[in-house]
Image (cartoon, rainbow, N blue to C red; front, side, top):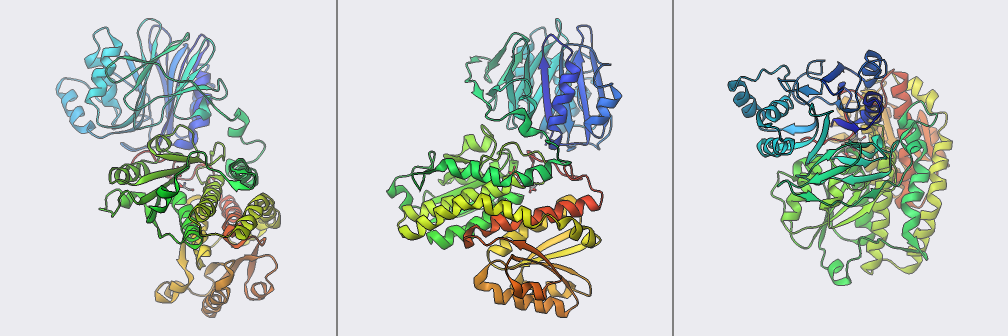
Length: 608
Ligand code: AGP
């Protein structure tokens, strides 16, 4: 949930670290700090709030001198978000500074032990134990101190350590939390995400759990848990620095909404060869495919809602039973899973702790695991048997948009692919759907263009304090994502209900002036949804309908209308979510919310 960054070079480190933190800020923004070694001491600057506060406090780093350092942007787990709990944390002797992403689960016991040994704790964090352990175990050999410290830690961590030794030494360690090394020329780096590395280098090394590295300006050495050197492959990052910048948009979220047609294309087109869908990393034999008797989709948040869309499409086309399970629940259930189960794990970041745990649990019970992931080299991508990457590029806004639509795109393709391989789709339908896939970027762009005036509507409706989303079948699946978008960035209570369920309880809440967003794109149940509109209107509700652009019937009934272009029915969610994303964005803007950094949230939920 936090972002960490490290630099070792022959120029001032502070400015590099602060720039890196700005690029990692989506991971957490409760406080920010840096520690830089000037050869004589480790200088620390840290402050509550955004990285810009740190930049102001240090005059963009000019006040903190030295060529080796670490930085941190925090999403608080242990201890309130304040200056003292902000990272980096120093050992009592000032020889070590530490930044940490993750949770040290046995920190209370370690803290007690270290206190009894006379170490003084300044913060409420779990991280501070690491700084004191390093001091305890350091007897002139930093590698040994790192290994002894790591052996005492339980939980998940990526750690950055700067040590006052010579002119300053930099170390990075990983256990169940992302950490990537960047290879520069005359300088080297580490970071929680490649976003902080791409301004400097595209050559990266992905650390594995248990590994640690020493970085100097000239190079880096990676060691395994026993201290033996490991030769690591160097990977090349596929995208440019501009991809992780706002490019003239006021917010990353708006930029990412606008990028969706292009991201869809980047995800789908390379996988259609000679009018056939080809998944290079999912090439099961016919026998293996036919042995699958059920599919479980697991994920968290929006990724789970993408899975809800996928469930309707896969069941419809493949006639294989599909359930969608919250990863945070699945990991602690006793699910009925065996070798005949295909587990589809969906995650933008590839680092979500609950999703990783659910994956491991199901894999241990024999499930074959297919991951749909955006971040290359992430933990989920490594743990899965097969990976289909969404090529959405870096997603920075906490509220996912292009991450979600590319996940839905992959699930749609997968449904067509499986239906064909299982012999459950005729060639005419197959060809029609492939043609429709090629048309989707244009349809998504039209969804954007049709809703350019949603801003005015959002202004008029932004005073509502609770908003209901209703729909049936795939419309209901999209309601879930539409409601989440609104609640996470505007802080309006918003919830999705299956329209047919209203009368079983929720309609008791509907009163004069209630806003009911009604999704009515799913044609087979359109008349039923219209009846639900009548029911809520009869109780005084105001209806905002999301429906095909040429649907006159709904325009006459609803108070307001968000038009969606007509598409091949199974692809409608891809276009339909766009006006809801824009609506959420402009409502949040109208309410003065910090859209890219919503309160209490972080982009990558690497803790339970
Ligand atoms: C979506 O807008 C969220 N911020 C959140 O629900 C997110 O989708 C969820 O935490 C899963 O993340 P992942 O895709 O990186 O696993």
